[in-house]
Amino acid sequence: MDADVIVIGAGIVGAACAHALAQAGRRVRVLDARIGGATGAGMGHLVVMDDNAAELELSRHSVAQWRALAPRLGTDCAYSPCGTLWIAANDEEMAEAERKQQRLGALGIASRLLTAGELARAEPALRAGLSGALEVPGDGILYAPNAARWLLSQHASSVQVEHVKVEAIESDGTLRLSDGSRRSAPQIVLANGIEATTLCPELPIRPKKGHLLITDRYPGTVHHQLVELGYVTSAHHSDGDSVAFNVQPRPTGQLLVGSSRQFDTTDMTVEAPMLARMLQRTLDYLPGLADLNALRSWTGLRAASPDGLPLLGRHPWREKLWLAVGHEGLGVTTAPGSAHVLAALMTGTAPDFDAAPYAPRGLREVA
Image 1 (cartoon, rainbow, N blue to C red):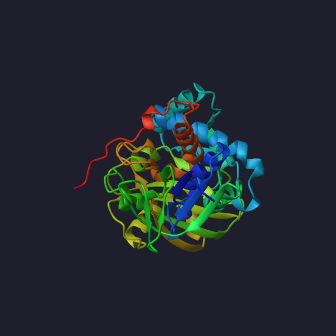
Image 2: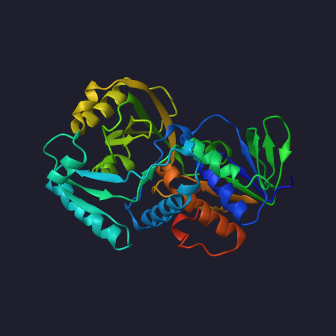
Image 3: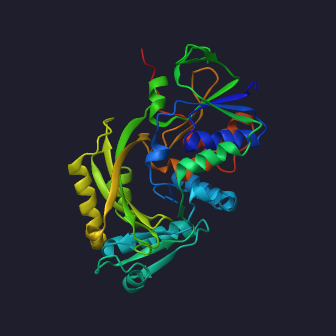
């Protein structure tokens, strides 16, 4: 198949881009090195985030797209509309829950404030003494590696996947592969997460390491995705090592436990001090975790941009190249919206929302 577009990366963002471009009538070849990335290492949450207006717009459109796709997803994608409870540990955080509800409500996103008593009844495993929570019922979770494979399978006649590593992007946009061969297409999409910096060192992307842990099966222990309201300030956009309470009930009955952030390391080793710090934070909210068996822990690298927003659009100077990188911890959530924006720009149509905040920025020429 002669491709109109080559997508580098078959993780959730690359798969979503291939899916959106195929829907727009493009023939797509996906090149993937099969080295494992953030898609397989992450939590798979689908959560509306409102740190800023651009993040809220991208995440709300994306979560809505995931909900629309949900009835068609394979069962192995493990989609669950469990919703999110943003936990307020004190009166100050409860006030933030109220402000968050106002921000979401202004865009028609349903949410509900829970008192301390209502929270205790909804999630009895949480410790006593919490102030309440904000429930966002439209959020969910899924198993991202299988969701990526599902997206790639939906247009079998126009999306082909080739397992090969791209070694370099040449000045004319031709791709040099690890086997010495070359591939070319009228348009190239770079969507391979932190690995994108090896092909484009000018990208303003930094690795953000995270630890996760999964337990044995304990069905019914937790019913919603549980996130502390301090998550945004203590973890999501922090510039140093940090942890935050974030627990998911997987459809298997297991608990997926996060989260941690460490900048500027590519060492994938599970670090006992950081894991212990993350688990202690979890115990502060979910004391019964101490009695559960852990099956394994692992790490992954998120690709973080300076302002927390992805870079979506044409590369400022590289021929043929388009960018879909820098999603940090929201790649799974925002993959459909990111793909929608990029496919619209690449095909000369107007996206459903303003693409300007995500335009590639901060790139520096490297000698």
